[in-house]
Length: 113
Length: 109
Image (tube, rainbow over all chains, first blue to last red; front, side, top):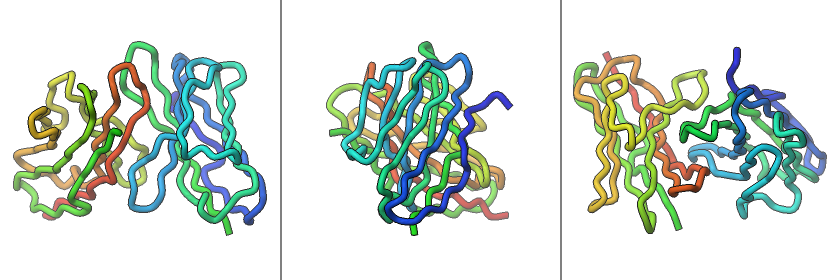
Protein backbone atom coordinates (compact mmCIF):
# COMPACT_ATOMS: atom_id res chain seq x y z
CA UNK A 1 0.00 0.00 0.00
CA UNK A 2 1.56 3.25 -1.11
CA UNK A 3 -0.98 5.54 0.50
CA UNK A 4 -0.57 7.77 3.54
CA UNK A 5 -0.08 5.75 6.70
CA UNK A 6 -0.52 6.78 10.34
CA UNK A 7 0.59 5.16 13.54
CA UNK A 8 -0.89 4.29 15.94
CA UNK A 9 -4.46 3.91 14.73
CA UNK A 10 -5.84 4.20 18.25
CA UNK A 11 -4.40 5.69 21.42
CA UNK A 12 -5.93 5.79 24.86
CA UNK A 13 -4.09 7.89 27.39
CA UNK A 14 -4.68 9.44 30.78
CA UNK A 15 -5.05 13.16 31.19
CA UNK A 16 -1.71 14.81 31.68
CA UNK A 17 0.29 12.29 29.68
CA UNK A 18 2.19 13.09 26.49
CA UNK A 19 1.40 11.37 23.20
CA UNK A 20 3.12 11.29 19.83
CA UNK A 21 1.63 10.33 16.50
CA UNK A 22 3.44 9.53 13.29
CA UNK A 23 2.46 10.13 9.68
CA UNK A 24 4.18 8.70 6.61
CA UNK A 25 3.07 10.53 3.48
CA UNK A 26 3.08 9.28 -0.09
CA UNK A 27 6.77 9.18 -0.92
CA UNK A 28 6.88 11.73 -3.71
CA UNK A 29 4.65 14.26 -1.92
CA UNK A 30 6.43 17.28 -0.50
CA UNK A 31 3.41 18.77 1.27
CA UNK A 32 2.05 17.33 4.50
CA UNK A 33 -0.95 18.45 6.55
CA UNK A 34 -2.37 17.67 9.96
CA UNK A 35 -6.08 18.01 10.72
CA UNK A 36 -8.20 17.27 13.77
CA UNK A 37 -11.74 15.97 13.59
CA UNK A 38 -14.19 15.82 16.47
CA UNK A 39 -17.51 14.04 16.50
CA UNK A 40 -20.06 15.57 14.16
CA UNK A 41 -17.60 18.00 12.63
CA UNK A 42 -15.48 18.12 9.52
CA UNK A 43 -11.70 18.04 9.75
CA UNK A 44 -10.10 21.24 11.05
CA UNK A 45 -6.69 22.34 9.84
CA UNK A 46 -3.86 22.23 12.37
CA UNK A 47 -0.61 22.71 10.50
CA UNK A 48 1.15 22.31 7.16
CA UNK A 49 4.66 21.45 6.00
CA UNK A 50 6.36 21.95 2.71
CA UNK A 51 9.32 19.60 2.80
CA UNK A 52 10.79 20.08 6.29
CA UNK A 53 9.53 23.64 6.75
CA UNK A 54 6.44 24.21 8.85
CA UNK A 55 4.75 27.00 6.91
CA UNK A 56 1.49 27.52 8.73
CA UNK A 57 -0.04 26.74 12.10
CA UNK A 58 -3.66 27.14 13.11
CA UNK A 59 -4.71 28.94 16.27
CA UNK A 60 -6.05 25.53 17.28
CA UNK A 61 -2.47 24.41 17.73
CA UNK A 62 -1.86 25.48 21.31
CA UNK A 63 1.56 25.53 22.97
CA UNK A 64 0.99 21.94 24.05
CA UNK A 65 1.04 20.80 20.43
CA UNK A 66 4.17 20.50 18.35
CA UNK A 67 4.72 19.04 14.92
CA UNK A 68 7.91 18.18 13.11
CA UNK A 69 9.01 16.88 9.77
CA UNK A 70 12.75 16.63 10.29
CA UNK A 71 13.87 15.22 6.95
CA UNK A 72 10.96 16.25 4.81
CA UNK A 73 9.56 12.72 4.84
CA UNK A 74 7.55 11.44 7.83
CA UNK A 75 6.04 13.80 10.38
CA UNK A 76 5.26 13.58 14.07
CA UNK A 77 2.60 15.38 16.07
CA UNK A 78 3.14 15.55 19.81
CA UNK A 79 0.61 16.62 22.39
CA UNK A 80 1.97 17.39 25.84
CA UNK A 81 -0.09 17.28 29.03
CA UNK A 82 -3.14 15.91 27.25
CA UNK A 83 -6.59 17.16 28.21
CA UNK A 84 -9.96 15.53 27.68
CA UNK A 85 -10.73 18.12 25.02
CA UNK A 86 -7.88 16.70 22.94
CA UNK A 87 -9.90 13.56 22.31
CA UNK A 88 -10.42 13.47 18.56
CA UNK A 89 -9.40 11.85 15.32
CA UNK A 90 -6.09 13.22 14.07
CA UNK A 91 -5.77 13.06 10.31
CA UNK A 92 -2.69 13.42 8.18
CA UNK A 93 -2.76 14.21 4.47
CA UNK A 94 -0.17 14.77 1.79
CA UNK A 95 -0.08 16.32 -1.66
CA UNK A 96 2.37 17.00 -4.43
CA UNK A 97 3.46 20.41 -5.56
CA UNK A 98 1.55 20.07 -8.81
CA UNK A 99 -1.79 18.86 -7.50
CA UNK A 100 -4.44 20.36 -5.28
CA UNK A 101 -5.73 16.95 -4.23
CA UNK A 102 -4.85 15.95 -0.69
CA UNK A 103 -4.56 12.23 0.08
CA UNK A 104 -5.63 11.34 3.57
CA UNK A 105 -4.40 8.71 5.95
CA UNK A 106 -6.70 6.53 8.06
CA UNK A 107 -6.29 8.74 11.11
CA UNK A 108 -5.25 8.23 14.72
CA UNK A 109 -8.11 8.18 17.19
CA UNK A 110 -7.06 9.67 20.52
CA UNK A 111 -9.08 9.11 23.68
CA UNK A 112 -8.03 11.00 26.79
CA UNK A 113 -9.50 9.60 30.00
CA UNK B 1 -12.80 34.52 7.40
CA UNK B 2 -13.54 31.49 5.32
CA UNK B 3 -16.42 29.22 6.21
CA UNK B 4 -18.21 26.25 4.67
CA UNK B 5 -21.78 25.42 5.64
CA UNK B 6 -23.55 22.17 4.93
CA UNK B 7 -27.06 22.68 6.25
CA UNK B 8 -28.11 19.02 6.14
CA UNK B 9 -26.57 16.62 8.64
CA UNK B 10 -28.53 13.65 7.28
CA UNK B 11 -30.03 12.92 3.89
CA UNK B 12 -32.01 9.81 3.07
CA UNK B 13 -33.14 8.98 -0.46
CA UNK B 14 -34.44 5.96 -2.31
CA UNK B 15 -32.33 4.18 -4.88
CA UNK B 16 -32.88 5.74 -8.28
CA UNK B 17 -34.07 9.06 -6.87
CA UNK B 18 -32.13 12.29 -7.39
CA UNK B 19 -29.91 13.49 -4.57
CA UNK B 20 -28.62 17.00 -3.90
CA UNK B 21 -26.23 17.94 -1.11
CA UNK B 22 -26.10 21.61 -0.31
CA UNK B 23 -22.92 23.55 0.34
CA UNK B 24 -22.61 27.28 0.93
CA UNK B 25 -19.38 29.10 1.54
CA UNK B 26 -18.09 32.47 2.60
CA UNK B 27 -14.76 33.67 1.28
CA UNK B 28 -13.54 37.05 0.14
CA UNK B 29 -12.06 36.16 -3.19
CA UNK B 30 -12.19 33.21 -5.55
CA UNK B 31 -11.70 29.96 -3.64
CA UNK B 32 -11.03 26.47 -4.91
CA UNK B 33 -13.93 24.18 -4.01
CA UNK B 34 -14.00 20.45 -3.42
CA UNK B 35 -16.23 17.60 -2.42
CA UNK B 36 -14.61 14.84 -0.35
CA UNK B 37 -16.31 11.55 0.47
CA UNK B 38 -15.78 8.97 3.17
CA UNK B 39 -17.31 5.54 2.65
CA UNK B 40 -17.80 3.23 5.61
CA UNK B 41 -14.47 2.07 7.05
CA UNK B 42 -12.51 3.91 4.38
CA UNK B 43 -10.40 7.02 4.48
CA UNK B 44 -11.43 10.44 3.30
CA UNK B 45 -10.94 10.84 -0.45
CA UNK B 46 -11.50 13.48 -3.09
CA UNK B 47 -14.70 13.09 -5.07
CA UNK B 48 -14.49 16.11 -7.32
CA UNK B 49 -13.26 19.70 -7.55
CA UNK B 50 -14.82 22.62 -9.32
CA UNK B 51 -11.84 23.47 -11.51
CA UNK B 52 -11.89 20.12 -13.25
CA UNK B 53 -15.58 20.44 -14.18
CA UNK B 54 -15.93 16.69 -14.52
CA UNK B 55 -18.50 14.16 -13.42
CA UNK B 56 -17.27 11.51 -11.03
CA UNK B 57 -19.42 8.45 -10.25
CA UNK B 58 -22.34 10.32 -11.77
CA UNK B 59 -21.93 13.30 -9.43
CA UNK B 60 -21.59 16.88 -10.60
CA UNK B 61 -21.20 20.12 -8.73
CA UNK B 62 -21.74 23.61 -10.03
CA UNK B 63 -20.08 26.63 -8.55
CA UNK B 64 -22.51 29.53 -8.23
CA UNK B 65 -20.47 32.58 -7.28
CA UNK B 66 -23.54 34.78 -6.95
CA UNK B 67 -25.11 32.52 -4.36
CA UNK B 68 -21.71 31.34 -3.03
CA UNK B 69 -22.85 27.75 -3.36
CA UNK B 70 -21.31 24.52 -4.58
CA UNK B 71 -24.09 21.97 -4.40
CA UNK B 72 -23.42 18.32 -5.25
CA UNK B 73 -25.96 16.48 -7.39
CA UNK B 74 -26.61 13.06 -8.80
CA UNK B 75 -29.70 12.30 -10.87
CA UNK B 76 -30.06 8.64 -9.86
CA UNK B 77 -28.69 7.64 -6.46
CA UNK B 78 -27.22 4.16 -5.98
CA UNK B 79 -26.84 2.19 -2.75
CA UNK B 80 -23.06 2.47 -3.02
CA UNK B 81 -23.41 6.26 -2.76
CA UNK B 82 -24.22 5.89 0.93
CA UNK B 83 -21.39 7.73 2.66
CA UNK B 84 -20.37 10.90 4.48
CA UNK B 85 -19.81 13.85 2.15
CA UNK B 86 -17.77 16.93 3.00
CA UNK B 87 -17.63 20.18 1.11
CA UNK B 88 -14.29 21.99 1.41
CA UNK B 89 -12.54 25.10 0.16
CA UNK B 90 -9.07 26.52 -0.07
CA UNK B 91 -7.90 29.94 -1.06
CA UNK B 92 -5.79 30.44 -4.19
CA UNK B 93 -2.21 29.62 -3.26
CA UNK B 94 -3.39 28.55 0.19
CA UNK B 95 -3.09 24.81 0.55
CA UNK B 96 -5.05 24.13 3.71
CA UNK B 97 -8.64 22.97 3.41
CA UNK B 98 -11.61 24.32 5.35
CA UNK B 99 -14.31 21.69 5.65
CA UNK B 100 -18.01 21.80 6.31
CA UNK B 101 -19.51 19.62 9.02
CA UNK B 102 -20.51 16.94 6.52
CA UNK B 103 -23.72 15.32 5.31
CA UNK B 104 -24.45 11.63 5.86
CA UNK B 105 -26.23 10.20 2.85
CA UNK B 106 -28.20 6.98 3.10
CA UNK B 107 -29.57 5.44 -0.08
CA UNK B 108 -32.35 2.98 0.62
CA UNK B 109 -33.31 0.13 -1.67
